[in-house]
Structures are given as C-alpha cells and as structure tokens.
Amino acid sequence: MSFDNTPFQPRLGVSRRQVLKGMGAASSLPLIGGFAPAFASNSDGRVVVIGGGFGGATAAKYLKRANPNLAVTLVEPARTFYTCPFSNLYLGGLREMSKIAHGYDELRDRYGVEVVHTLAQDLDPDSHTVSLANGDTLHYDKLVLSPGIDIRWNALEGYDEAAAELVPHAWKAGPQTELLRRQLEGMEDGGTFVLVAPENPFRCPPGPYERASMVAHYLSQHKPSSKVLILDAKDNFSKQGLFTSGWEQLYGDSIEWVGLSGDGRVTRVDAENREVETEFGTVHRADVLNVVPPQKAGWIAERAGVTDDSGWVPVKPETFESQQVADIYVVGDATVAAPMPKSGFCANAQAKVAAAAIVASLRGDSAPDPYWSNTCYSLIGPEYGISVAGVYRIQDGVIAEVEGSGGLSPSDASPEIRQMEAEYAVGWYNAICQDTWGTDA
Image (cartoon, rainbow, N blue to C red; front, side, top):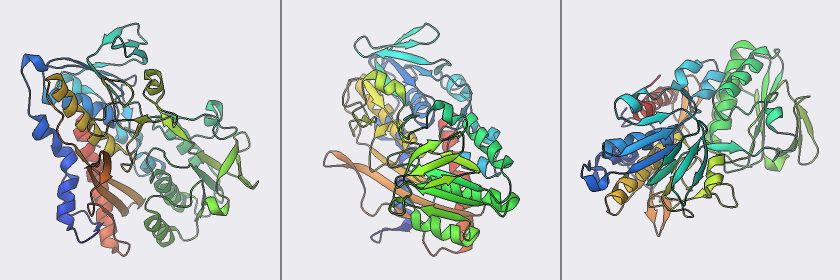
C-alpha cells in the first residue's frame, strides 16, 4: 500500500511527501543496506524466534529473506494468530474474527521457516537452549523474543484471571474479544458500557479510545439509548483532541471520558457485580464492564532474565539486543523503546532492524544504522479515521523521533479526508499483514 496520499499534519514545515517517504523506511529496510542477501557459509547459524505476532513472524520471515541458509525456527502455540489491530472493529460490528485471523503457511512453505506450534516453557541463556512444552530442546546461536504483553494480575484489586472471565480485558485478541462482543450484544438498551483505561505504558496507546468509539458506533446502531463511560488513570491520551472532537460529532454526549484529575483512576474491581471503585471512593456500576489492566512483558521474557524492575525489557537501541543477556533480541510490545509506542507497526519495524543486526553479527559484520517508522490509524466511525505518524533514528545513543518527521491528522479535516483516512486504515492493515504473514483481510 502506498501512503503518499495519507492526510496528516507535519510539523516544522516538512512536506507530507518527505515524511511519508520516511514512514516507508520500515518496510523497505530489509531490501537495502544491511539486508543484502548473504549466502556465504560463514553467515549460516541457528536462530530461534519465540512469538508469532507482528514482531516474531516478521523477524522469522526477514531473517530467511536475508539469508535463506539460516536455520530459523518459529515457536508459537497458536496455529491462528488474531491481531489486536482491527479487533475493535469486530466489537463495533464492522469485521468478523475470521478477518483478523492469520496463519503461518507462507513462512513455512515459501521461506522455509520451521514453525513449531507449542509453548516455549523455559530457556537457558548460558547453554543457548530453549525448552519446549512438547519435550523438545532447541539450540540457538541467536534468539529473538517477541512475547507481547502479559496482564499484571491483581495490580487492580480484585482483577485476577478468574475476574477476567466475567469482566474481560480483551487486550489479547481471541476468546476474550469474543466474550466482550457477546456481552455487548446481550446488553439492554439504555445500559452503560464502562471501559477502564490504564496508566502508561501499555499496548496500543490509542486502543482504549478507538474501542470506546467502536462500541459507541455499535450502540448507536442497535442500542441507541445506551452510553459509554471511560474511566482513565491518565489526564492525557494519544490523539486526545482528535478523538474527543470525533466523539462529539458522531455520538454527541453518549461517550463520557473521566481522567485522573476527575477521579477516573480505578483502584478496585468487583467482577461479580460489574462494579469498579475509583481512587476517591466513587463506585460505578456497569452493564458491560471492560477492564484494560496494567501490563508487563510476556512472561517468557522474565524467565529469560531480560526484564528490569519495570517489568519491561530494556534493549540496545542499535540492534534491539537485550541490554542484560547477550544473543537475545527482543522486539515488539515487551520492549522499552520510547518514544516509539507499543504498536504492531513498531513491532514489525523493530523486527526488521533486529533481523538485519543478527544477519550482520553472524557473518562478523557491524549492524547497519537503524531507523524505524510508525503510523497508527484509529477509527472513530466507519467513515471517520484519524492517524499519527513518526520516524525514529538513533540520536546521542538513544532512540529519538526525527524532528519534524511526524504529525497528527489535521484537526479541521473535512469529512472527505476523514473518510479517506478510514479507507487508508484498511489498506494499512492489509499491507502490514501481507508483509508479516503473507495474508490480508
């Protein structure tokens, strides 16, 4: 998909075409510079990739694209991966689960990745081995972890794994998403959908607010007397002005957002009664309650010894190798890579940088200079899209957004522009899924 016509507002006078040329860098990176194919025998090696989402599947694919002689094994328990991007559209009645489902045939059949559908139970960085639930042991020269996120159970009082079966988080697409959809469909007209949004950092910063939008769209079509209440542990959120303006235009006063300063921070969950209590003791009762809880890196990252006290994984910005354990590279939502957000696009871009660094390291070369791009579309309505974009490079030893490289959709965009962005969102989703798994919607 070309983004040359994507509407947004660049900063500091940089032209839209210049910025979008940079945004395409993540997709083109594996084809240039450090990703020239390397077929020499001294560049062969064994790479194990754990996790088959946007980060892991991309890493496995681009490792083999760079050097088909590498032995690459992808470990992913699920045979079908459901994407968090566009799962909110399922809640809004705009897409079915089958349209956010992706498999691994292309990785296996076209690129020669060995795909093992089992759980990686443990790993030993000293012996460079991974222990699998099926009893097998894999040896690696380099390891890529793309474990996504896990929930910090009981970080909110009362919200544990049992509570999530009554009050879903749906922050991992799949059965939780389907449960939330069933609850939404079963809600009486005139009811209240309460969404609890967490403090930063968490997976997909605009996600809760797109979810509120898609739920409001569904309610406007099927339960028009209902409302959405967002209780937020923050006073600011991604694309806030664009979201609130869109809510007012499309849904009037049916979406209410309460931030931290307004006593929006939830501290206790009563899943049985679908109630939450805020910091100052206010109790809210929901007809449908969706709790997006605090998060951390997927549990295998902790087992690998690559997490720090924050629960996330610090990485070397040039390569995304762990700062704490050699030969383990970590990409995607599990990492600490600010100002890059925890998004599918960033996971895909980070995976390509890590793959390039691994290929270079195995053949005794220095890693190429990295750069990344991110674009994040959100739908407020079926024909109302908004976006944010950015390009990132290493500056003074850390990841930094390139000055003037990004921007938001214009706040005063016409309905035609909003509709175009909604169409671009679909094109973006199809393109990145093709790039990752070889399948689209």
